[in-house]
Amino acid sequence: MSDANHAPVPPPLDDRDGTIWLDGRLVPWREARLHVLSHGLHYGGSVFEGERVYGGRVFKLHEHSLRLVASAREMGFALPWNADELDAATREVVAVAGLAEGYVRPVAWRGSDTLRLVARDSSVHVAIAAWPWPQVFASGPRGIRLRTSRWRRPAPDTAPVRAKTAALYALGSLAGQEAEEAGSDDALLLDHRGRLAEATGANLFLVVDGALHTPPPECVLDGITRRTVIALAHGLGLTVVERHLDPAELSRADEVFLTGTAYEVQPVTAVDALEYPIGEVTSALVEAYARTVREPSPDLTSEAAPAVASESG
Ligand SMILES: Cc1ncc(COP(=O)(O)O)c(C=O)c1O
Image 1: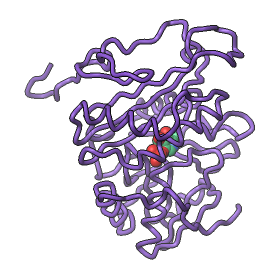
Image 2: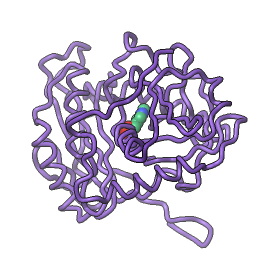
Image 3: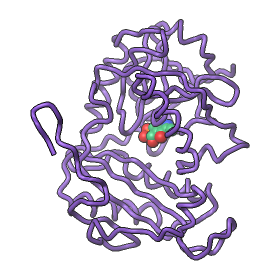
Image 4: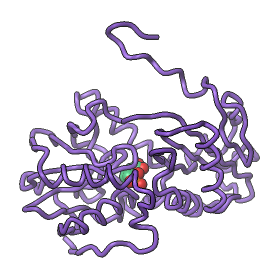
């Protein structure tokens, strides 16, 4: 549906043409279904990834596949496919869809063998779907406004914070909805101790006196974009400090930005009442990242994690 004042509304996600990879084979899009008594639906233990296609290639594909396998392990189940096999399946999905620019969503869940909470022998299913998806925020690189959420990222001994699991996204979903209802673009979550953590789907960076400061990935997701941007920052000669950040430090920051597969490098123009310009450092990283995702071999981070200065605080 569309008219002069409204952008076309895309069809719902279960009613599209194309194919989805499900448990080892491509099935018609509308037939990629799961049973209502699936364990993963009831107890939130599914794991997933969000990947971006640039120029027909999935950026950092192997890192995403490895993280999916690791997330499942963290949630107590083994995937029936290893990371290389997931890479190959993902490439097939993207190729069959003929996608040049898009988004890929791999997801894995325990099946409907039992609804016992403990489901050690349950079947495990994996699906991979891909579709065109330009940008999360209509404002694009013009920046977004954050609102501090009342919800906090849980402590590592309270929830499986290292896993990219649906269980944790209940919080992000609530926080994001409340932020939007209050007129912001996204929520900023603090951690269990009240320190700065991350947005609903992106890692947080502050620029202070030309250096980057970012929370360590203790109870925030160890973002693949975060790692890429840290490597790019080093390449630009910037200092990167991983340390715990107090919310009061937001008033000392010259620039603030987020990193994530969907967000890319996203400038933040406001956190609550504090306003930020889109400064030189953020702009340089926006550009460097946009170049890197389209380079033939942008694998800056696969083998070695970049050196990061570390402080506790
Ligand atoms: C909670 C959360 N933090 C951070 C990120 C950024 O991670 P990545 O750069 O791997 O997309 C994401 C996105 O997946 C996320 O959902």
